[in-house]
Image 1 (tube, rainbow over the protein chains, first blue to last red):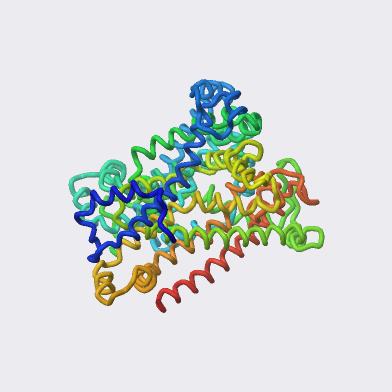
Image 2: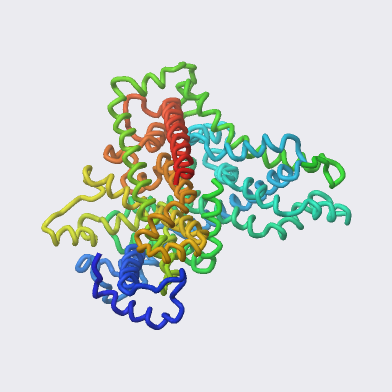
Length: 297
Length: 302
């Protein structure tokens, strides 16, 4: 690997923060640092470029895109967002998605608590068996077909309720996260609360959420990401367009406006925007949640 | 574990537990067991058609002369996809993690950017890369043109699988990087100091200190990646559609057979789709257990 001239400015920056570079107790070797900055720059570009290119395209008028599809936008326009919003009726899709995500992830989190807490404490019989079942639930076969049949036969096909219930019951690692976290909360706290007259429900729904805020928010976030980004189950369960979540709306939009890339890019950004904003503010939480969930799994 | 309940009667606990678990059982466990059951039937996607018990016929169809070519191709695609994704995602994630574990300015921004696709979801990612690789006016087409070449990208049967793998690795690497970073930060710095005193080069430190001590993270990442990539098809569906033979993987075949597309002779037989689900389930189970056993053994050797 040779050093690249491009990284010179970055290398200058290291000079500024040099005072205490010896993190692992050895002198940093300069060429290596420069190479590192070069590599990091490459990584950042590989990840940032597609998104920046999307934004760039979304700001182009259709004519500008036709004349100059890959160059930097010359006369930025916000019109595409308005047109995409209207033509794709994203307003109602976004509302659907928000509803499905909040209710399904909320319900899933409450369910994880409701089944995880008594199992962790042995308030129901055979806690070991249930614990094993929670783990086994992570390795189930692909259930698309039976979920569809079940919805059909329960009259839940093409209903938001059915979609929400199915999405909510995909609790994944939720119960395991809850039981895992509860093992670090001493049982004496249960006893103290009971002594002070708190009932089971009150304890579970008002005391525990405060004690377990980190793990419950992890559970919620994990499930919310899954619901917001789902496309397959929605495709299977919703023949009626008015009930589609935003992912399906976007996918259909792509089918309709196949080559109108500036309009499509604007639509994509509309769908991505809530996620990007959430990521900006909740990044630490989101990263910890996804990774915590993955490792548990 | 003390099994008495501190909150008076046990029934409230049992009731709320039953309420929660029944939803999970109905919408998650029943469908899972149901897959095995209906794989022995000719159940269809329309409710008013009669369903018959047909024994192993769906499995025979899967291995029949008419279907085996298509299914073997799907199997091959599944393994190509899973192996390539697992290998490249892990190697690149390890390199990026080692890189971003150094004291570099802006490394937090870099970490955040690498992780971003994890939350973006397949539809958005699919559209972004359809744009980048759009054959007529995308930046990738520009690059190809600079070499005097042109390509249909996702429409090119020879290239489609490679591109799908690239996009999958791009979007999945964030989780692996963060897991590796956590593993790296758990390695005591004294070990590096000792290595330095012994005059180890950067490569030697990586090879003899970092990699062996990172073995548990390697196990976790590899396993996650194998299981995930053997079952994943959402991105493939969004990028190349449900019936593209070049990228047909087993889990996509389940979707296609069950819900759409004029594939094969058993149109819309969801029993047949369920049989494919079971075949896939067995494959995932065998491969992941074998991988787990191998990786655990390796952990102790290193």
